[in-house]
Image (cartoon, rainbow, N blue to C red; front, side, top):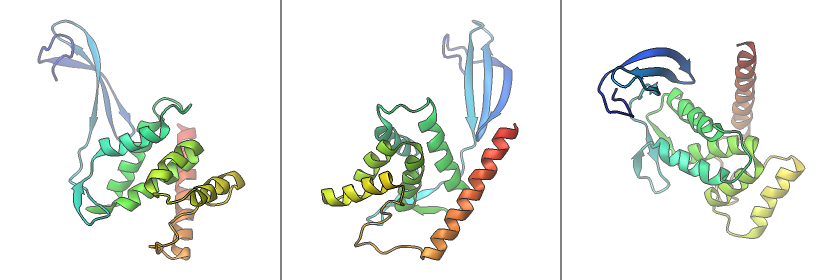
Length: 188
């Protein structure tokens, strides 16, 4: 690891800690004694995204981050929230074990997290992702947020990929996983 200050090629590790899905290492340059931090993450094998036009493209975390950042721009969110959201989505995609994932699945994952995080960011993302054709469709989504009802999940002319029973089962499973994760974080 080259020192970011003097460019020297060698450093020593002062401290290592596990963080999220990687390792954080505190290093010290052996030439100028400057300290810096590096993050190591396992680079999993290729994951491909199936676009709406059936093209396949390698998953790009930066594109995911850019979309979430645009939606959350100028919103009062805690620092690191956007990066953590992208990390969670990326980790969930790799945990699924699939080599190809439709872009709609990724979009739905982002919308789900943004809805829980910030309603304005959710509306911003949804307005682009769902490609609202008129103001009444957008108004329905905003009204559903205000009323606390589930938002319009798919456009009216699009068929659902899962039955309502499968969707309900996935929702319950996700809620129980989130509760278990929350409890484990509290116990640490």
